[in-house]
Amino acid sequence: MYVILVYDFGEKRVNKMLKLCRKYLNWIQNSVFEGEISEVRLKELLLQSESFMKKEEDNIIIFSGASQKALDKQIIGKERCSIDTFL
Picture 1: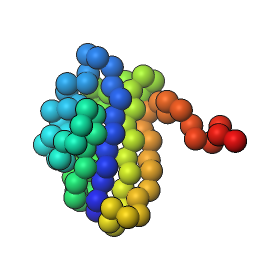
Picture 2: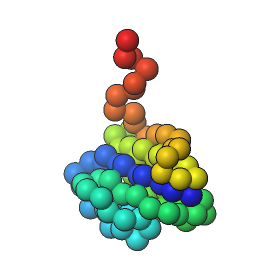
Picture 3: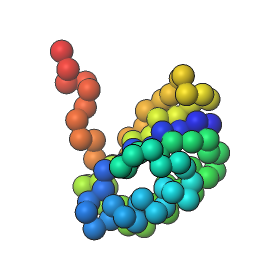
């Protein structure tokens, strides 16, 4: 599966997440990673992030799909701005 992972973590935890994501995906820019990953490896990454993530402050957004053309969006943790509020 193809994944784009974006995260927003507190200052004290951001470097831990950066190091973790670099083990699984390709770094694109600050807090943005992409690449091919199996569902098992993605779950492994997310389980490891739970050890230091504060869900009331931090978030992870995952865009996933069979290819780069069709991706689903999943938000884990606090959603910063919902697109449902747009008119």
